Length: 147
Image (tube, helix red, strand yellow):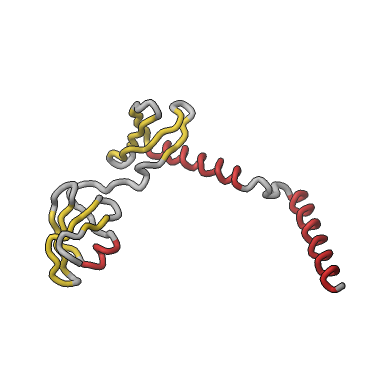
């Protein structure tokens, strides 16, 4: 680990190594705020370097959700605890509460799950038909294998 090396943190952007003493003490500086703090080398490699002066960047930033009223929205920032700032395709800023955004995100995930597996049996009758078909194919393979 050299002085000047850059590492990406999990929630606070990039840090650069100012001074490396040993594996227990590494002095780093945050690029976006300039704050300096000491951290262990293992935590630095894992990205567990919190900047205590600013709130962490949310995992939601950059994700897209579909809204009935506004169309496709891209999450740009999570303010305070539950206010989400988003931008639509016309670059208009829209604020929503976090539970509403999570609900839209869950609906989108459910729709993708339904689209991805259309052959899944819905009723017990469909499942029985599929099992009978599979059993007959396996039985035919076994009888043909022996002859």
